[in-house]
Image (cartoon, rainbow, N blue to C red; front, side):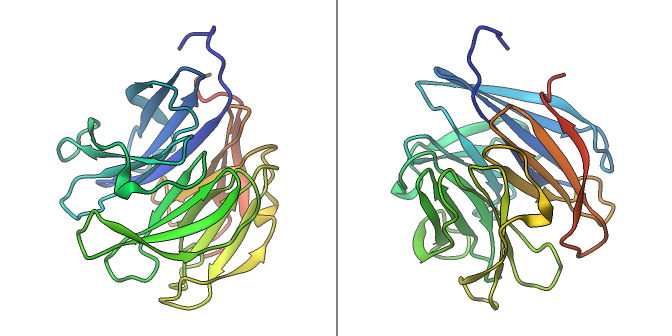
Length: 267
């Protein structure tokens, strides 16, 4: 990538992909976006190599992807939040492919402020995925698929608000069947909320500084078990083009320890 381009943000997203895990790394520029999918070298590896890259022209800065098979057709869907608040929808070309094609530039006509960030999780376990969205100056909005396998989503609830430039990630960290909502915020810390009950769309605050993690500025957390060791891994980008890798100290724990912090993933 050219050194003459001004890079100003970085977000990492993780998704399960046919028994492998992949990280999507985004470097953002003033005039175009370079998106790199980085594949794990083995199923149990925490080492990653570049698999593919995409460029989007036209000022689509601060893009933010979320991965899910929305319509259960065996092909991964990518929802990409954009600077202007809309969401682009891409779909995998074929099973196990690293190629994706554009389906819609304005997914479900959703528009939410600006600098939209996204996460997808079936919080009420009804096989209709829930879309969590934040924006630069607004809290969480929750949308849900209208029916099983539908690509139409409707607004369902208002979630927590932690301030500006929030970035959500939803998973079940402690394995209690209730979703944990992590929200990275502008000052680099991560808020932790937990679902109040199933299938509730209401959350209660657990802590304003999850596992004492502070990455400096604009935390963007994502959680998955990268090496299939039964312990969750948390990766978070930040505005200094860095990535920090934390791992759960034991199964179902809310405590994570730092494994690796890299200023640039490319180095």
